[in-house]
Length: 245
Image (cartoon, rainbow, N blue to C red; front, side):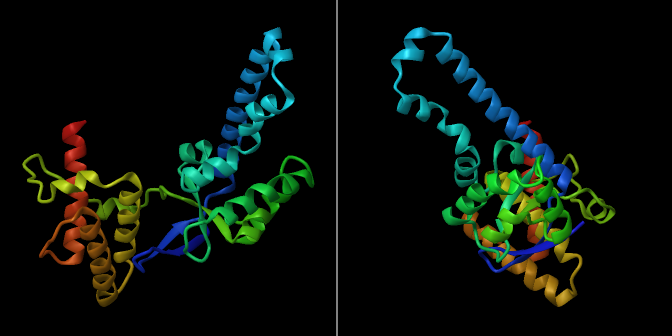
């Protein structure tokens, strides 16, 4: 599986798996189903009612159908690089140079996609470019400087060994950990996996940068070293989620 490195706003380098062709194809299929369903429902409502069919101007009807054509652009802009299909498959559009995609990046992906899919039929060119590129980029991604990553890495032995264990008598040290979002937790877990791949000195630096970021976000302080803090904050979050669940 190809890997891309993304540097967070706190200058922490994280490695992500590039989303595979299968994940992207299923996400695209889900999106097509959603778009078709919206179009079909609107079409049936308008055409089954003469007062709507002949009473609505062309411009009004165009506005009703417009979300179908702007679907990917709107979703990726307001869902932080995800469409509903990408959310279900847990993949996301990110910048290759580590920044957050801007409107122009999403716009380039959106405007080039129809052109890309018009060649070769059924997105063959897109599939070939993703497979051959090595960075998970189709032509629209290359133009926009983006790629698509997996947010949830495949479970591996290392992750199982280092997964935090919680006993029933566990005492939460940082109640604020429950306020971490799914995206925060994904990032922290990615950092945690990277820590165990680095030398002692690099691991400590890596962990301390992450600790500072978490403390600033949650408005807390801690005397724990970076690695211990990360383990604790993950346990605190997991324990509170289980308790509330």
